[in-house]
Length: 579
Image (cartoon, rainbow, N blue to C red; front, side, top):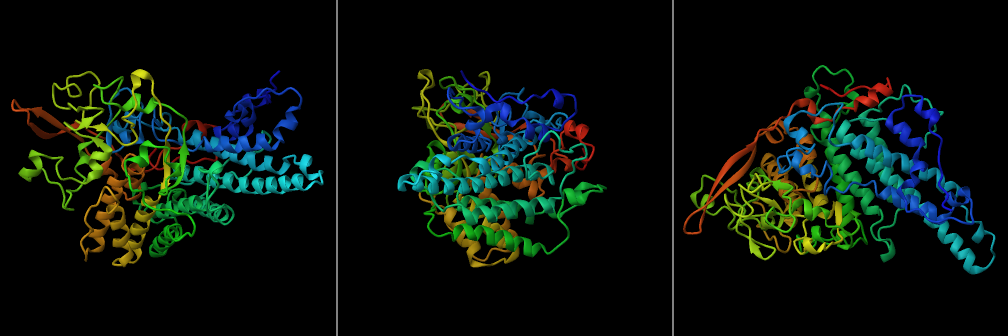
């Protein structure tokens, strides 16, 4: 018979308990989302102390690292930014765009999801102290002793993998909420949680970066093929790079948006030397770049970074591995293709950000540009976005009014574009073909741009700024010209920001970047644009930018509200500004 470990929740249900506490004490009742095995000859206690079960628990924590394919009610987070519009008007992601989200209804359930990961990591760290290796420890044979030492080393490494993952979950929390409660041990139902308080933003950042440092010192640079995809030293240093970039940016160093909020330590850092913060961010990114033995390199095929099992590629530092599926293709194939539902449709706002192939800006007021807006553009435009009259799955895309994929067809794109990035066009959904690929969490191009951005803020004019932006632009298959020499700090800042926008499009960076830069009103609050495409009698096309949707952004939306249920359950929690 199958043995399941069940915790009696009758006592817990008699009390109002914050999610993060309830999750912390009921973890085993969910069997850690692991595949259940038939147990016939060992007790439950023996099971949970076994090496294999403990490894499975660690693997389960990795499943809480988000994959951004259908993250918010079937939509990508891109559809909550100026990158895209989600075709389905009833999707909860639309609440971000129309301003109807609030502390009771937050479409992105980050609080629950990431505290679940924290809980599992904390429980795992306790479990690693009681793994039973007596079978090998008490066996004097050389083979058994070798196995014993190897497994001790494995368990030691596992702890740092879990600590890295916990630090990652906390970063995901602070970029949404600011300072949050920090839990570093497995809680029990007997712990006092009625007055749980949020740690300051500074305390949270200090904790996360310290955990990154510990993980980096104790995790390997690379793994054997059987363990590829696990957290490495480079992953820990990359997380530190991203955390310190956010810590140096405007949002966490400015309080004006918070009005008369009296708990500023929860949402901003103490006044200090901004230059030093930018230097720390630059140094953290450079530590990844300089890390010996990684083999990190920009991949020579930009498209394949997103439609293959990319965790093995030299550019990928850390990725969320996924099983075979075609769910994302079903959601995002153009409406006129087999079983397509349009899904995430890119905006004209984003399309216009892609430069001309000679490095100049695209301009609708230029008659040549307007007549043929997709000609001679940054190659990444066509690698990330399906454009009208380009060939896709063996036929031209008909995104014009009256075309098979255009306006007038139910659930067709409202922007005139379809998503290409991460969508594998080689699948036949009518035959239920599937593919395996990975959601990239950290890749080298981001680290190059992190470094350039931070360096430009603390040491404008440094030669490395242009060098590392140009490396991203010069990738094989992209081959854009180098940036002009002699750009001012402000000019370089805008070029770096635009490079992030086009290089990292649809990778869950844009919404957070524009928040940390504090340009929400002019990006997330600007009208979302599309293109109206008319097919002329001679087969040529006329393109006209149009407004697709008005968007709402208020200063309070720089951070999410703390969920109202958590505030009700723990009187020590304080709501964020404006909510």
